[in-house]
Amino acid sequence: MKFKTLASLALCGAFGMGFVLSGCSFDTELVYPDYPLATNDSESWEQWQDYDPTNITIDWYVDYSSFSWESEASLVSDIIEDKTGIRINFMTPVSDSSDMLNTLIAGNELPDVITILANSAERVQLAEEGYIYPVNELSSRWAPRLMNRVDGEISEYFAASDGLLYGLPSHFYTTKDKEAYEAQGHALQSNGAIVARKDYLDAYVAYKQSQDPSWSDVEATTPEGFVEMCVWVKQEYGLTNTNPTVCLAPFETTNTSTGNKAINWLMEYFNVMPEDKDGNLTYQYADERFLEMMTFLNELYREHLIISGNFTTSTSQVGSYIQQGLPFVCILSPQDYAGNFKEWTLKNPDAEYVPIVLTNSDGEAPQLRSLAGSGYRFTMITGNCERPDRVIKLFDYLWSEEGQRLLYYGVEGVTYDYTEPAELFPYGTMTWTQEVRDAFNSNTHGEYGMLNSLVFLANPMFPYLTREEGYPLNNYTSYVNYNLKAALADYVYDHQALEFPLNMSDGQYGDMISLRSRLYNLWIEYIPQIVMAADADAARTVWEEALEYARLYGYQSLTSWQNEAFLAFKEKLGIGYAYPVNDPDSGYSELKVDSLFGDPSLYIEVPDDVVKQ
Image: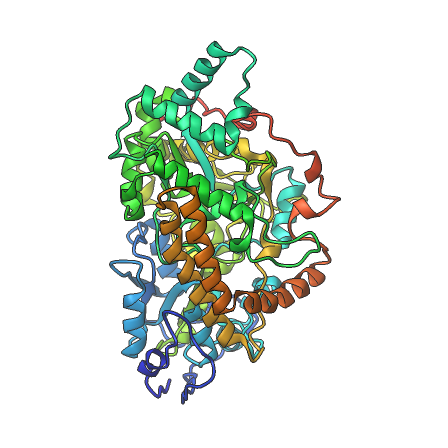
């Protein structure tokens, strides 16, 4: 591949605050090496040894500091190498600042494969400027069955301005698979949640009812009731100001539009409307409910329930807090800390964390987005890859049903038993062998390598659709993880209509993405200031200042431009509303909050044969 110098990307301001598709001059040309083409007569990964019997090692950069491939020396990795002739050398940064990614780009040192955030400017820029091989072209040459395996939704959603697909996403939930899951009688859980220590909750409920027998725990679901509950717990149990009574997810500069997942999830609990009553996209930061939510956080801060240290706390520190049972309440994505919650629960089963419900001051039922998403990370083959013919076969193998079974379940007859597809189980069903059940119970299953292998090229619905119980309940941690959100099922909806693709062929695209990035950074800067304001009036003043800056930046123009894509996406889906609150046929008006604890009947008991460890 020829480059004019990838450093020019950085010099043109392509990364960081935003990027521009025009105004930079690039001279790139993809070069396709002259290796034998594959035929459609057999699987592509069965056609490499005839012309190149040598195994190769590729470099794969994952722009995620916490990623580790625990399966590097395992049954799964050995089979991947045997099938594709490829061994993978993973590279990761020391932090999630994207500094290493920018350095690789600027120095023209991108490795064979990269995995980056699916919604990032870099993902689009690299594809649009010719630094990534299109999957369609590689497939047509060396993996002719691959594009038949890639759902059309994925191809259309991630299509570049030339209509081609330049990588494969993780965590993309296709309509076909979601409908199959619903047909099985299941529904996906929420993405984020508010969880609290049950022993403290029970003590508070008992105290309130001893004062007033008519008191109902639903009164603690309001912002006022929630704060009162947290203050009582802090005082009753002597929780110190050095540890958080209410622990928020870490504040970061990546992954969310607000810089904090807790803020994103609270917007859903407070019903900050992403769509107005007429079905148009809103600018949520301008909603009075957003201010109400921020004022609520400000009160928690002023009551010393949220500590200032939470604004610099790392993911590992939050996990440590949880593992010690220090917070009364955690607002985050529980699945990110499943191991920490498990460790606490093992030692303190009567003080486990359970999900709770919070509303806005009007008592409206929250609307929590489901786990279903339109891609979290995106994996691409770069123009620096010397053997794209071999790497696309690796992608083809892993994306196939055979590859998916390997990634999630291991080897048939050794780690799982397979039942052929049936009407409600399009991928068949899998059950663990006794050997693996024993390995889970003795915590030695890592030697097999399934479950944590190459999740970037795995269908997230595969383990749900291939289990009779509808959820990958493999060990004690998985049961703890499930129950951290189970009781919230009534308030969960499919959010994908609000994750609409933008029009990359629009001449305003580059400018608008740059503007969106500026606005994200604005709120990432201002949100902590609002939370830490001196009082509620001061919090409003800071919010108004931030909103005025957002107006001057041009948030109204951005929202109007995004709304065109939003309306077009809904029309394509055949829906009038993306947000159930607005849809008179959704049944939302009948949805009520009648308990702080949600619906505890939805918890799953841990079977006796699952060792709690």
